[in-house]
Length: 551
Image 1 (cartoon, rainbow, N blue to C red):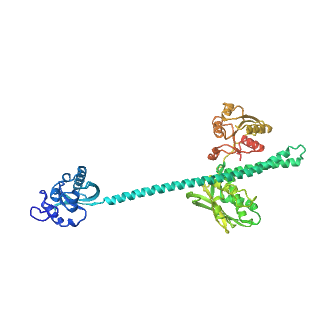
Image 2: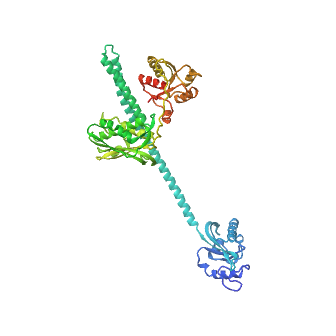
């Protein structure tokens, strides 16, 4: 303990010669208290000179009180940079007259580094003038080290978790790839099986048609078999494209309730006499914008699936609700819509939980051999997704299933919005047709068909040759019949170019599949889907030449 000039005890403090009487009075009271305070407690005058310090201050500075009282940090601290930082902080606090809490890195007398948490506040006299500063500090080195270790541990754990997640994602990717390859194998096997069946019928029929002594009735039978089989093959292809969401849709706005009322008789016939069809429709119309033909096909597929689930006996309920939210299905987020929901409800045997994830895959079926192709529900799935909706299934084994088709709801179409066709004189036989087809077999066969039907065809293999043949005035051609997928300029681009140059010259497009048509259903040109018959080709040409729409 030291004494001031009057002989009063001050603990580790003394009069520095510049302290005011007010400061001395306050410090006299504080001196008796600070020794019991842990850590470092100190006071400084307006010039930054130490006027009070406890045992912790003495230990921190490493000097006895009589050697640091009355001196600044720059005079008593070994680390000059540290002293300058501390003094700058002190000046700021006395100037702003606001208390602060600061983390300060300090150098201890033994040369080690420590982190101190310091709380500093200005010291005022009775008149409210700043006469100095009082502060306290706690050593938080261990706490900071623990925090750093905890942060390092957290970082390490985060890295391990990230590595585990990455490893899991790799495993899941490999699993998905395996499942994808399995699905591709199943799809390939299904396509091969069905097409081989169809090709067997065609091959056998053609072999028999080559017999010179074949009676006319059998010749007609085999010709009909070939034609029917081609239709079945085309239908199979359309179902596969529907599942893959690659079919060419022709959307139109229609009332779902009205359409269900119209097709219920057809569904009743398809499902059989022992199955009743019940309709639950709202009073207000529910409009959607979708491909009507594909919508009807989806209804048929769901109704037939419901019939088979009930073994041909029971009641199928068709229910329509409007302004629905599309729920989260198969990992996809919820969508507010609005959507029209078309539900098909049966009370059959239900679907086993292990099969629910696979029911929309092509060629997957739980039905017996010969009782299902496994393409019906895949068509429903593909049509829903390509139309901006989805399909949900809820099933309880032994109690039945509900398939709900969600399609975006639209406003009622304006009255009188139907297009007006421009009618021109029929030109049928003798018309000059520019055929644009890069496939040699198809181009030659199409030209032969047109010639046999009485047209005058001219065949080119690409769009550039077609434009050169048309020239500035159309080259005397009455119509252009072009494939869509060709090297270089495609059929859609060619059609737009012809319309810009020769607006009077009609164009018909033909395609078996094109991503261009999938992405641009409103391409604005008549489309003939492959495979097409001679009659379909002739009808399309004649209808287009008359200014009619072809379906």
